[in-house]
Length: 205
Image (cartoon, rainbow, N blue to C red; front, top):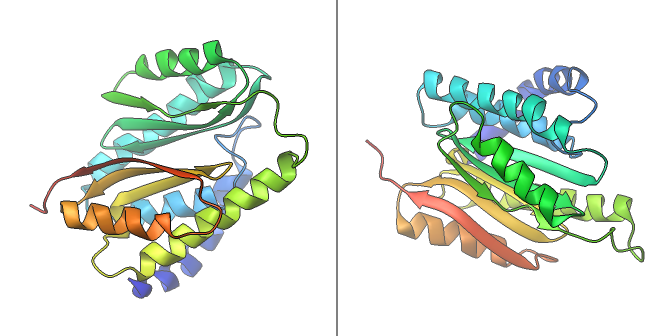
């Protein structure tokens, strides 16, 4: 899958523009996320209409959900695949996690919601928010690189998020073997504390 790397470089300016236009309460704090979304939309194995629906839903979730949750949100991200949403991130109150799930389910066009937001009482003060962010960025970068190089893994249909070392996988695998390969690759990454897989299997048409 190494042939995707030139595309990543070529789309860097597009991703930068997307970051500059993001709202103050962005979906997450990871600057790699916008680039990842742009690349996914350009190369994955789906119709342009379906991809457009997902991008629209992600924007609507930002406006209709994230911006309403207030200052007790540490970070939240919404990944959308075939109008199914996976919410990840960290929040300080369980009621806000439930509210995020409820509001997301109420967004028109959303078919299903996996609410994987972690409820974390203020961030581990021994580590600090900045260090936690760097750790997750490193983990997500390693996942990206290793899945790109992984034989038999169609990385363009997959999504991944790391929240303080807890990794969440999402999207579509073409076979159960491919799904297990992806999980196995992530399992061996340093500092990964747990893996939650929301990858479904559907062969190529």
